[in-house]
Length: 342
Ligand SMILES: [Zn+2]
Ligand SMILES: [Zn+2]
Image (cartoon, rainbow, N blue to C red):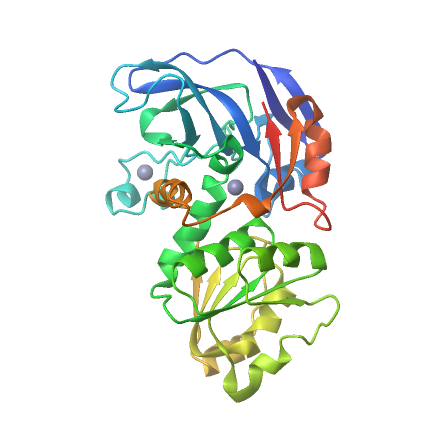
């Protein structure tokens, strides 16, 4: 089978790999679609992010869907031929954080396509994948493209769960790539009243609008666009910070109400924070990282038509055009989610 392997920054290759052996309680899946994530792009462009660096070739990818080819042992209700979304979250279920109900903080996490541990955890951009039955969520009538959006949607559902009560809240989303746009959808579904989204350019904002943002602000066109929300000590109860860019966070803080929460999702390396304002306004900063159970909620909400991710899916490429897919995925002026068909 073919796989998409990153060797170093800008060195992406299509290589042959041996098929994996199938164990009890596992399924073999013929992958249909893989979505390119911001982290995949970081490996492609820079060979890593922050302290995480590629030290050996690694198959990229963790946003995938496909059809079951083969089952072994007890795989519950899964059936050969069925389309599934595959969760890349593979906690050990035995370490202290797994036992404390924080599987996304697992000490031995084997999340697909991650260079955090060494040896790296090989990813899911390949024609066939062996997965545990417990990783697979039946996709029902969802397209393979939609099913492959379950992973980034799960990230946003996890952040929304960590944010707490959403009904009636005023929400600001900074950075409208796929995660920002999916946070708009998740906040709306959870009962947010007013949602304002920012980015640097019209294209991502046009999609934020399509997925129900009430107002969008192009911070490149008007760097002071958030200023009016700072009157009377601020407007927003919650910030989803999805850009990972210090200027976005700094511009947002004056617009937050006293007591507001900053939910940091963007991973852009270390940022300096306006601590004076954070202290005086009694803001709460929370990080949000990956997800676990939310994966099944994401698929369920999409299957019920309660969250529609289709406006985000802008590009599809064949496996052999992977380099073009990665180049396109990084172009924020025209791409939201670029996917690869296997
Ligand atoms: Zn992702
Ligand atoms: Zn664990």
